[in-house]
Image 1: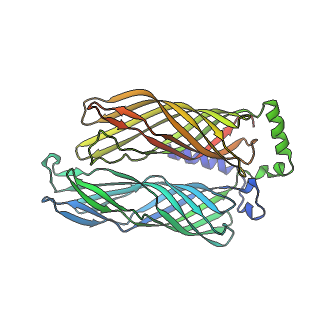
Image 2 (image 1 turned 90 degrees about the horizontal axis):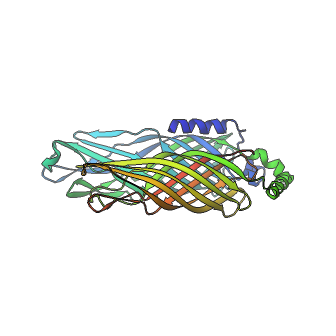
Image 3 (image 1 turned 120 degrees about the vertical axis):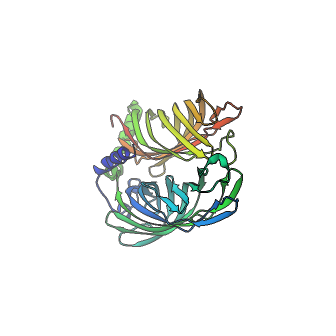
Length: 421
């Protein structure tokens, strides 16, 4: 699914004209943002884990450096003064140190960078910002039996956490290419980890990451600038709005990350939060021009799983529902929106502690918010960012507790096509 999504995104941007730095000539709404696509590689520095010996004493093991190749897609905004993008890991590695094995990966990393001096051709520009990223860590060991129940080898819990590290670095632009050299500082990198079901230790995740990226810069809206400047677009919009012909059906396709917000009460302390999920985000809807609002339907299936010592668990959610979103304002083509969402969900849980699958269907309420990059309301194609927050989605467990499906769905870039434009 990821490969198909990447192919479709490249197909869309491949038919657009390439413009390297349109906002240098002048600052207009059609030059507000540019699309970026590329690759990068990230390297971790430092980190120490702890393992339990047979006598329950602890042994420190240094974490090997991890190299992560990643696909990067995003966009520059505010005429070269800001850069928003997501980085999707394309592969991961496992470190083996004798009898000890560790796996440390990251989910989709979302980065917000600010440039005091705008990005320009053949100039080095410093940046600083903030990232939003989920980290996954798991360790296993052999020849250690702190509890005979787990035999000669056992897997520790899956540690999932959300971090807000700081980022910094420099960007250099050459023609329609951006080259970044930067770092990420995870300043809250110490985490408690259950090395056995009854023994906690402090593991130190890598505090520092360095990366280099190579991205291509595209513009998808400049072709409409002339009609805006001579007033044709405004006149046409006003006429179509008056005639009721600006209303249009649309379809959207993109890739979402799901962040599970709450630990399930049914689990013991050594089972941590669930790892993020990736899913296709497909929607269809209708744009109501008079209200400047969308009504849409969407279907989103996803799941997560965890294994911790004697517990193996999988949660599944299939969500079908609708949402109504109202655009709040339009700042040079940057148009944020917000509105209620109501979905009908199929919730399921497979848990090794119970003999059968637990399932239930129910309505779940939430909130949808995000923004469109739309230089005018005549565009047949726009880029949209969606965030959906479901604060209270629960499934009853057989022991009287419950599983938590509370989630934040984040679709950074969704391609939206309007019929008849």
